[in-house]
Amino acid sequence: MSPRQGLDFKKVIQTGEDLANREGFYAVTIASLAKELNVRPPSLYNHIKGLEELRKELALSGLQQLYHLLKNAVERASAEEAVYQLSKAYVSFVRESPGIYEATATVAPKIQDKEVQKASDNVVSLVLNVLKPYQLPENAALHAVRGLRSILHGFSSLEQRGGFGISLSTDETLAFLIRTFVLGLHQYEQAT
Image (cartoon, rainbow, N blue to C red):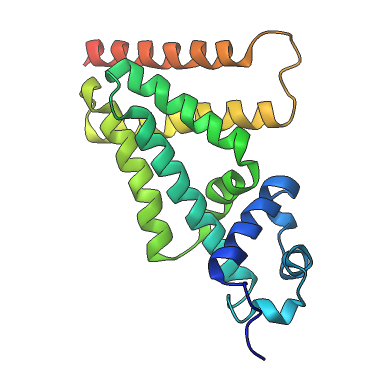
């Protein structure tokens, strides 16, 4: 059977992203994607090997998108402003692409693939660069990357699930969290 006219790998992945962001990452299956594309499930195998490859490609695409968004956010920012801009960009990515973010946060770390690992390493390296002005020793810098990710993931997860019931601006809460994080970096810097 020849591939359907107009359907290609890029369209399959883009449609998978749209479906993930609308319905949730785990709602993306071969059957649901085929339905979304108005094709029979076997037609997708002309473009992807199966669900595992589809999920890998969605995670990879998400990591690449996140990296470029973060990189653009910090390009011309000062040290402290860069941490805040990076954080805003991260949360913005989660708000706009919740399904693909889910792929980057829960699926990507489990995938044994060189491309996915490289994309993940690029994000970590970018954050390490943003934290360089704080002159943290190597292990402390990696702990700081984990800490910042934990703050941003926790904040985003609570926000996505409607966990902030008090009528305060969540953007102000995010700014407070990042200011507190940066103050902690300064305290660490002075203590060493």
